[in-house]
Image (tube, rainbow, N blue to C red):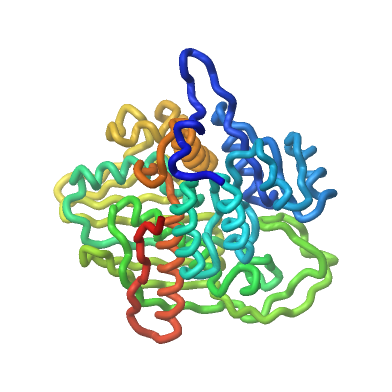
Length: 411
């Protein structure tokens, strides 16, 4: 079992001119997101994916062969007993995040979890306390904060370039659930959770704007809607974001009670205001997380579908489009951009930045109880869950609801 006091013996870095052994990693779940984790990890050079776990031995072996991974486990618990593995990525469906994250921590492994961290904020608070008690390095894959231009905007705001932040507004729009024949496990509350659009993509929007502004969301007023109340579920399976034809497919009707859409008014801890809309039924919007931050001196707008562009708005001079370029970045943000201007970096690069920051933290022997992390942790995951819970409560009661997210360290 790992403790916070064992970091000096867990360092994976260059010492005395000799390269130490690579950090060994196991992946649980190989649907859409698992392979993207693997690809990002492999770009680092000092981390090695040595195992994966799936729901059956046959499926695990097939995916391991496909992805070039030496060990395959049909039961993730067997993988957690593998002493070679130091870090485990939880890339499973939402409803098992809490149980698997808990087992990973108790096995003494460092952990990266997909969001949401759990099914509610009570569970996420328990995971945060346990991770702190066990002293493991804990991360949540909020990768949008790792885009180079987002990092640069954060530095500009911290440096006062926009003046006092007054308003934050934006949206996260997708179209992958536009048709009644679009169906996925996320639509089932027992698997995806009580919230869908808010928990799935609204959580990313909230995390990103909180990171950029340095301000926490403390109160919400929400309106949610299920645009398509009955969907047609294919008798068989269709992968997330699949291009599979709907011809000659048999369907069954399924009632839907999670939201396709939400608009949420938010208040930040310093009294500034904001609003955002999320939708998974907006035609033509593939993965459009966008936000505008209006300050007392200037405004800034960023859109994830065009991540190399940062719009800067002014009153008394022409507006600007700042293209991602390390030569034009604030010094604090240059580590987030890896290529010259014009060599655009996007979603996979933001994910790589997340992995680079997380694994560098481990490699350098940093202590999760003492050292500041430059990636989203279980604390951020817990805050996200608390915001989602408050949004659901606000919609049900049709009133402002405070976000309840205690952040005490329990050791």
